[in-house]
Length: 149
Image (cartoon, rainbow, N blue to C red; front, side, top):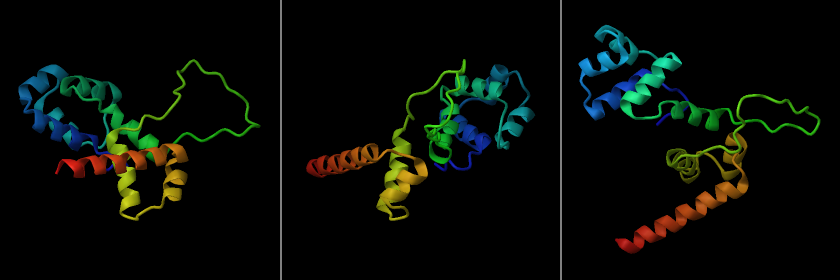
């Protein structure tokens, strides 16, 4: 999965195909015509309310794709000690949530020598302890799998 360029329409079409959902059910649920659905399939972006409806219909969190993009390509910057604390009514998220797919992607970057551990930590702002835990767990999982073969 390429989280850098998200073509949401194509991904929705793939999920619809996997689930085998009839076009009539989609049109009824979204209250749109077949042409509108086809236009959505070819769209790179969709309105958030439409995306929410698709997420409900497909029983799949399409917003998570964008969250993963943010984790990989726009991690939160660390505020310097001189910055003022700005209060907000919006919730503040404590941690990044790394999915299995994200962890696998990052570990594959290291295994294929596309990036070093230092480059991964710098680019994606992953703490050293977190990265090394992933690497250790990955090695442990591999050794357990070899024992079962």
